[in-house]
Image 1 (cartoon, helix red, strand yellow):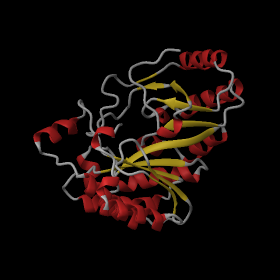
Image 2 (cartoon, helix red, strand yellow):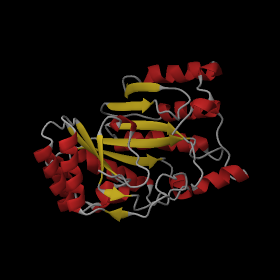
Image 3 (cartoon, helix red, strand yellow):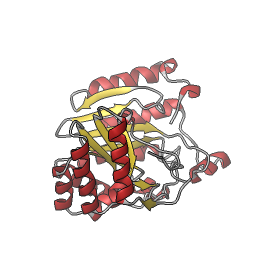
Image 4 (cartoon, rainbow, N blue to C red):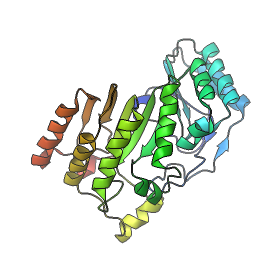
Length: 290
């Protein structure tokens, strides 16, 4: 099996078999992201994807999870995805979960019936980047969707019976309105009520448009202490009615947080307060990674 360009996956898919069903990202305009700047978006032929599945079946005795890449593989037509999911069932009966990246635009283009059908054929989780709950921040980063559309997309995923894992980025507003970013993101999590939330901390690679804004001083990054305060304000504004697994333990984060909301909310806030009072608890900049 051959991979094309850089390949990315969510942290929780670290031990999954990764198969590219698309190359790149159909949107590929988010100003903070340089992940897929090295390739033009395209949909791979089904027969090529199936050959990859068959090659991997010969190569691996056991495959517990499969992740369908690249950036927004949910852009595929529903019938094509169903054929892929059915082929996975045939070849990998031991596979416990199939995951996929989906942009909010992908989800909104599909009907509720289509999302439910994908779930019935074995789609196990959809990863979706929301980034911020603030419409202003979403416009600034050229996300291409509004707060209301993001909430609608995540609710549609969850209503289908498929868990949604939603990613947000601390520091994405920079010094300009970080309180709004935190409050609006917390309230967005409350409204969309996803199964999983991941909070990363902003790191921008060369090649992303925002990188030049940082270099020129147009965009001013938060300090490590400010990111802790922002995370606290975000969590204070989260009020979910069902269990939501919360993780802020990515390599980019200054402090590692793990818990389930709402039960662990006060404990997590306590960890953040302690870190704010003891800055030596925060990860050194040299050890932060994407």
